[in-house]
Length: 321
Ligand code: DP6
Image (cartoon, rainbow, N blue to C red; front, side, top):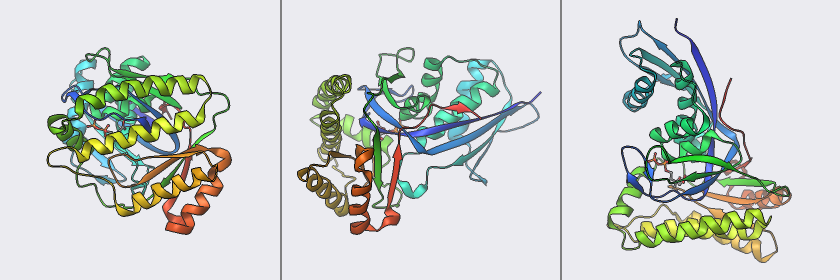
């Protein structure tokens, strides 16, 4: 009796970044992080365990893929559910590959939900978040919608995400400016590993991101968007500064990233409350309130072309469909 379950999970953008692991196998982070789940970008995944299959199968956007990472993840699910059957996994990514937004977060959150249900497990949300974390750290946050904190914890049981209340007057939007669609030269997995191993500033990052997380939660509790944005931007810059302090040093920033960052700084001088953040790539994501979206989109469209500008707002939790 092979039952298929299909799940949809949305990607997320980190405002306090996860950057560094203390356990690479269990994916336990060095620091806690905070993110916003996004509405327009998501992955849908169907999973069927079938005892007639001789091997796991994985299709992404209708194309057969190497199954090894998916199989490693499914092994965790099989062990929990005490089953041996192989599975077929069909995924469709609605995170435009051009968006430069991490799709591993939505991918592993959707896979965790669909695979655990298909294996007959009934996981509560913390357990589901822990399972998603084993695929990709940031995926543990995509189990929830809106604002989400991933508490670093100290072991597998204590490292999971939970939702944070969105202030009433916050209509947060994210404008992504696509600067390059080239595949990243240094994956986040490699980048954070190098930084942990070689940056002389790494321990300061851990301390400083702890303070940033407390301060950003205080700003949220006080409905203070300006402070919320300022802390996000500073935290992202600290992460990028760490990369430049690694050995060998590296940077995800491109000339156009800097150009976009300067535009955002200029907009602030004109009284528009907007702040940038960047992940393991050159694309610039601007955090702003809904009322300012159209003016920011116009300026970016004029400088970079309207096809480079994508807008999203707060999105829902992972769910079955
Ligand atoms: C810069 O979650 O992709 O986007 O756990 O190795 O799969 P792995 O890394 P991943 O790293 C995300 C890094 C980041 C910051 C963040 O999302 O918190």
